[in-house]
Length: 198
Image (cartoon, rainbow, N blue to C red):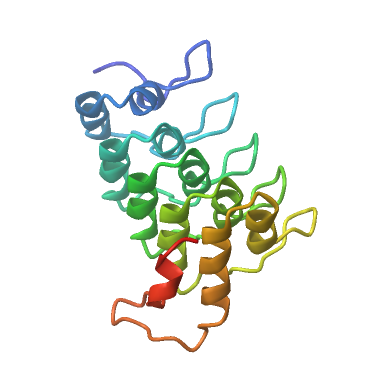
C-alpha cells in the first residue's frame, strides 16, 4: 500500500479498513492496522460509522477483538445516522460475543442512548427479549436500568410491552439488588432467580 492513502474514501464513502471490517477479512484488517498513519476511528461518509462500529454490527468478533487491543481506538464513537455506539449496534443485532468483548473494556460506556429513540443498549435488548445480552449488561455495575427513552419507556416497560417476562424478571431483580454482592472484578452478582426465565 506504499504511496497510497490508507484512509481514503471510495465512491461509496468507505475506506479499505471499513470494507475489510464489514466483511470480516481478518488478515486484511491486520495488514491495514500495521500501516503507518491508519485512522482507526475514521467514519464512512454515509452512515458516519467507524470500522469498529461496522465490525460490531456485523458480528465480526475477531475483527472487533483486534480493534479493542489497540489503545488508539475509541469504543464509544457513535455513528451520525442513529447515534448508536459499537455496543448499541452489536447489542441490537444480537451479537453476544461482540457485546462481551466491548463490555470487558472498562472505558466502554454502556449507557449511551441513541439519537433515534433515545434508547440505551439495555433498552434495545430488553425490547428484543435477548436474555443472554441483558444478563451481560446487568453484570456491569455501572449500567443504569431505569433510563427512559424519548417516549418515556424504560427497559422494564419495553420488555413488558413485548411480553419478555424473563427479561422483566431480570430487570426487577437488578433494581432490587442495589446492595447485592459485588465480585472483586467490579461486576454485580445477580441472584439465582434473575438468571432463570419464566
